[in-house]
Amino acid sequence: MRLRSVLFATLPSLALFSALCATVPLSGPENVPDDASKVGLRTSRKEQKPGVFREYPGWEYNNFPLPPDANVPGEWVFARFMYSAVPTWRGRLNNWTIDYPRSDRHLSAAVRRLTRIQTRSVEQPVAAEDGDDIYNWPWLYAVEVGHWDLTDLQASKLRDFLLRGGFFMCDDFHGTIEWETFVASMKRVFPDRPIVDLPSTNPIFHTVYDLDDRYQVPGEQFVYTHRSFEKDGYEARWRGIYDDKGRVMVAICHNMDLGDSWEHADNPLYPEQFSALGFRIGINYLVYAMTH
Image (cartoon, rainbow, N blue to C red; front, side, top):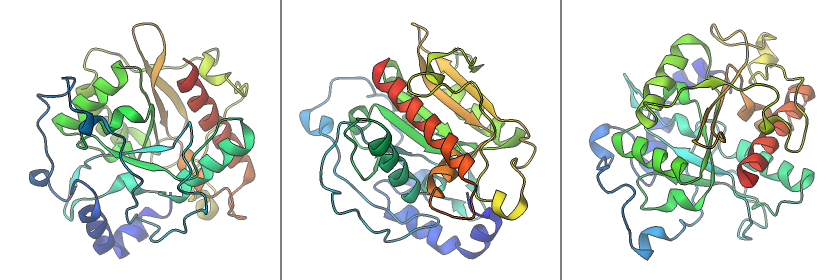
């Protein structure tokens, strides 16, 4: 995560432009389809077809160079969840694009290098409003969920996705206020399932790497502030939501910024120890999702 205050002060026009460029405009609630009545019902083959690769302007990057093998398919794809954000005086901003696409592609490259998983080199932005597309990407990631404000359709589609066996990982939100904002929407996804702390004995921490010795992974702000925490998020929290069989289906990374640890893995000013742990966590989570 870069210096948010600077970005918010200097890039409001880019944020609005990015929102308008998305498949579903996120600049205001009146522009977002919100009919959840058909979620989970039989759909057509056209609606079930996987979406094509798409690119959008982001907070930090535009026209990010495509790798030469961008069109080569893979058995795993970094799928980034597009969501509606809480309204601000500038409207609903596109927080889902923070770190995008540099973070996504760096993690994909790490999965290629550190595992035998055939990984696509580019990410896939996924919108709940795009028919049944979400069901084609079993590992789903969202960033800055301390700012999300899910519509009825987004909450219902995410719940259905998870109950069908999908896996959702969220990251990069900090402190009490952002936690409360996250929970407000997460409770609309699962009003009857508790959010719990994940013990170090959970298999999710031992799929590829043994991660008993975990520590707080800060965002890029560490380069400037030398603090590992943001706001009042002093301690990293590893939390989750289980399905009926005891499988983690929602992995919640609170008071840390794994997305930045992937994004800035090639930044000589960002400490290597944070990217090293960030990659290991990401790989463990996705391998757990694919094998459980």
